[in-house]
Image 1 (cartoon, one colour):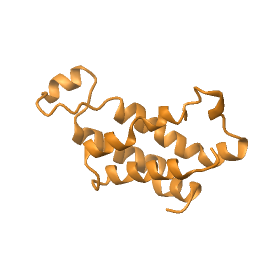
Image 2 (cartoon, one colour):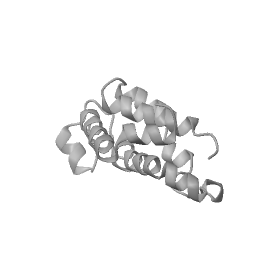
Image 3 (cartoon, rainbow, N blue to C red):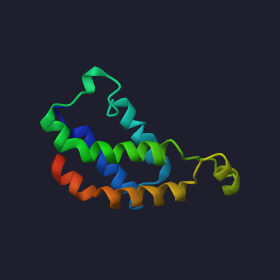
Length: 120
């Protein structure tokens, strides 16, 4: 990953969603399974990072792994679904997704991630 623009932009999008500056539908539309589509999970040989990149981008990759698995993969955008039904199905509401994103951003340190990968 020679050009970190995409990961910088998506990290900013995650931060903005977590802080409430971006609505959930816009977040989902723009994030578009970024973690998987950029092969940050390592599912393609071309995604293998050099040691220096791995050290620099490691926290960003972890942020996006967690956002993908704990937020994007779990969110249900059906406004009429009952929270109890969503919970039983292992899904979360838009507000719960935002809370999860905010917690993940705090735990991973989004601002530190942005400083490590490029200009914030």
